[in-house]
Image (spheres, rainbow, N blue to C red):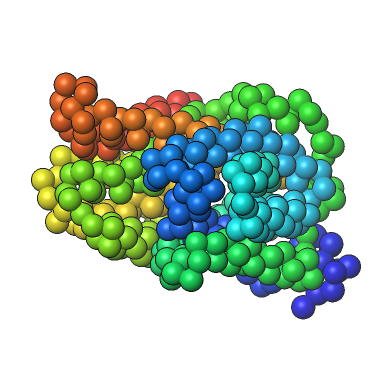
Length: 416
């Protein structure tokens, strides 16, 4: 165990166990805390607004948009600060803000307090992106996909455990899960402060620049890096496609299959277990044998197939069979992230991850609105056709676009 003074020294050789535990734990807590509040968020909003579930959804959607907007604007700034001052202080500040966010939501007795807490969380929503930069700092390029797989497994575990634990705590009080989430983030802040060393050596740091911190400018500059520009678009379409599950899966399961909440929860847990197995087993052992580029186009091809089947599936039995493909489709994210970090210098990993986090904010703002409106439009027949699976068909088109862009990039790169 290191003392606080020693923890400020950068990691020069292999990553210390404490650092690895902290980074993986950060991603786990981030996902667990987010998933923990999902079962009780409608109840809290109904309590704050005095409205029914429809009104709660309306205000919850606005809060998500505000969170996404703050993340889009501020993530490049946070990424640039991590390139200037190091990953450790940014991770600690982000976790502290996350703890404050959940604490304020748990204590909130007015809607404006809830919105204020969501804005704070959006401003400092850099835990995952800075964790990615930390991994890039301390890991050789050949091992990065495996380490990113660990982060993916931690996120999957958080989304498996979170809803179940949140539901149990919600039986005590709708506010109890918020306090539990705040406590988890606070514990990791304390652990990181006393134990975790800095990962970015001083010679690899660079001055902070407001021009690089411009979210639009950050995305444009990413396109100027050799081999990264097209990959940013691949990342965008992959993200838009993948968000169909958290955005409308529960709606589609009810409208298409007539599932109960318990059946929906069971299907999400099933998917989460498969995703964790993919990150913990397939990524470290199968992905290196396939190669990163081959793994991406195989995973995207299977993703297109799976989404089309889900769109037209006549019964819920098809769902469990088709979700097994997540054993392979889950490899696309760590493989793509590994390729992108290889294209960026050590002094710009924070900028890359900040830009991707900003892009994630765009996805978070666009995707839920797009998919929910598609579902209600086609499920109600207002579009002239009753087709509850429409969001998954559109999502398949997004994955197909990502696949075409990635294959096109391969042909360009392979040209002498």
